[in-house]
Image (cartoon, rainbow, N blue to C red; front, top):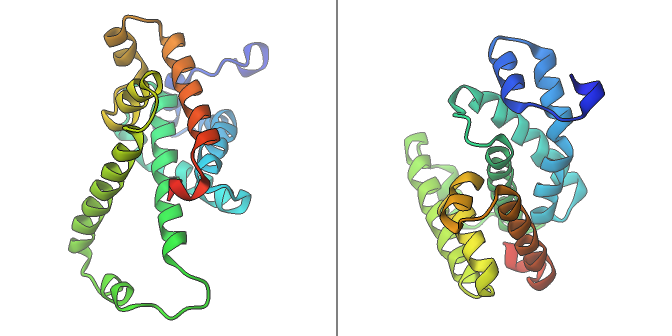
Length: 191
């Protein structure tokens, strides 16, 4: 299946993984590792950190596979990779080298585990608001596709139906929007 065609059927691999086939997960990692690495590297801009984040992405993917609902695997894994990279970038930017931890960090370290969910929700909300403000400054043709995919969390099929275009057109528009962001935003603006 993998030799003659190079087309990887993620849905078939996922079914095999859920039946306990370890080799199928290796195939999935091999098929998507480069994509995941490029996705996290586009945020982190550090090869070592991107490698670490990529490993964490696949651990999270493995744990979350039972909840996966055939929503477009590449879209799903890309979203996980971006969230993991943004979380890691946030953690890295919070740790100034060789400085004493501030009071805020001490408080965060002592939070009971049930409060971690509240903190995660607040951080997620803050990140979405900052991202929405940046996205509002994008050119119209890029803003629409980025908003639909990342903020409204729609998959390629939903976006294609709404815009009355093909899935390939959605992929192409999203690719061009990401390229524009990479070339137009400074690295610090990803933090």
